[in-house]
Image (cartoon, rainbow, N blue to C red):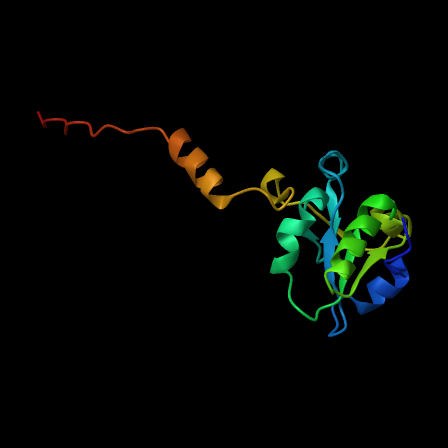
Length: 145
């Protein structure tokens, strides 16, 4: 990458999580890499890297941001650079989630596939549930003998 975005080490990020200085942490792994893993860094939100121009305006103003991908290379660096060019204080995680996991820092299991890429829509899940629900027929009451 062009070096436009600064990096944050795993140890520095870990020290800041859970404090007033904690950045907004965004998992921007490509879909295949995200789907192949069962975990996220604690406190991370999931967003698709290719949609950064769509979701960047929903980020809180003035809050520092740290993006991470698998190894901290072009994906997270590209997202952080895009966010910085939009005036946000964004950095990328050095070593990505792989470096984080090598240091045995805390992660959490993904809840389910709908947590996926921030693109799952609640309405879609409601529709699937309502379509899958069996229709019940009211049975006539049995007469007593």
